[in-house]
Length: 270
Image: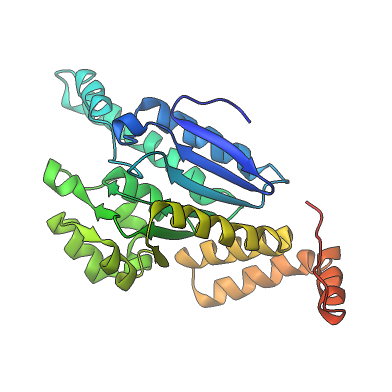
């Protein structure tokens, strides 16, 4: 796999492990993070031999959010003209948004494994993932309000369909901390593991189960679920009918049916 400065990317069979690799900085999201994460997930999207992705953070914390040095660098670029500053900031925000949207657009299920801090921009990041899991020491916070700004990289747009509008408003207005047990109750995470070691083991097990399924079926399922966020039920039904008009002709359907009838495990091509 390609070498990166803010990430370590490894393969465990058909599962890719994307790990934020700045443990000494609590995995703060520096300039390299934003350029590299877009490149990584764009590459994984087209890697047919990758069927699921685990996203984690090295060390004690998943991520403490956007690196303050990055914010200071942006501030240093501002000049005296309000209009030109606004144009610059809008471009910067769009660039950050596009970087994380690459995670959401990846056709492979992305499972986030979260320990320790998951703050600010890190919440934006996990909101782009298909599923989220954490260890008992996980601590979540939509911290932007305490910095005098509204979160602008996806939290406010994606979390309403994950934890509900009212609860998101409470967390976004107050910036208060959410511990693992509450995160589970809210539906922010699917499961809580006792330790970070058990967390990774459990998440890789789930990713492995997904990787054994038909990649055509899994990609289609993800596409349909993502489509439904912004469309009506009628639109979704029409879309899946059109999608499956092609995908039901895949050899995977016959292979899965034969394996089920013979009580064997199907092995699908990439």
